Amino acid sequence: MFEDARAQLASLHWGQPVDLIKDYAEPVCLALALQVTQPSCNDIDSLNQLARQVSASSADPFALELKSRSKAASAALCPYFASGPMPLRESGFVALSQTMVHLLGNVWFGLINHPEEWSRLHCQPALIARGVEELLRFAGLTRFVYRRAQADTMVNGICIRHGERLTLRIFAANRDPDRFSNPNEVSVMRRGLGQVSLGAGRHACVGAPLIRTATVAATYTLVERLPKVRLLSPISWRGGDGFRSPSSLPVVASL
Image 1 (spheres, one colour):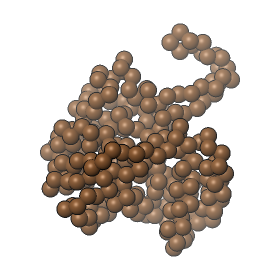
Image 2: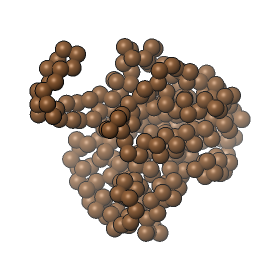
Image 3: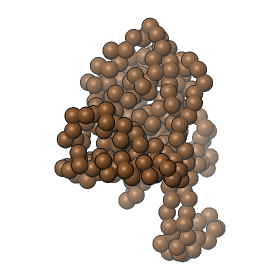
Image 4: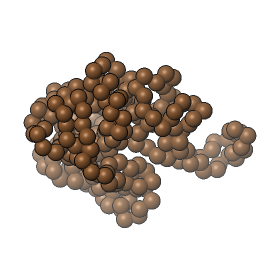
């Protein structure tokens, strides 16, 4: 992925505004998705459009029309991913070509708004992996997950009964002031990292190692090349209760 990311950045015209989502994240993530999942289809644009419909429903899971479109799109994608491990079939293609784009948008938006941390990573690239963990805490994608209690239990003095449905606020857990000092700030030097954006323990996301690797590669390549970037306009957001991310990240760069 480093090679694809560097080639994509080198192809851009940095003397004019660049959209980090459309011009960088989307093509790099699509290339990664194709490399990993190897679909049996040459119509990449059609696959990408179907994957976007599936991703849109994940972002806004209570929108019934999006859910209906997602079901049809998933069925249309399945025949092109008939081989390979199940997590790396059509769901893997959607995750890498679409969800990764949303995640990178959140991570980079958080980093752009903390220019001193961008500069630190540019000057000390060995901190990138640590920085990505902090950015996943600060700007991770998943907002909520839903679970059902398997037994009666007590949490912080609150009784939860067997069978009750729970809404777990991942965003709030990652900003818990009892766990993280100055939780609403990004610090790549933060001690005691422990974000739960990718789950934890036996409930950890099966794709977490690949997601971390891809996020490190795309972010490392970006801050390695650019000492400083500046957003050009207020950001509009897309998504819903599942996750939200910037629609675009138009920037000008200092080389």
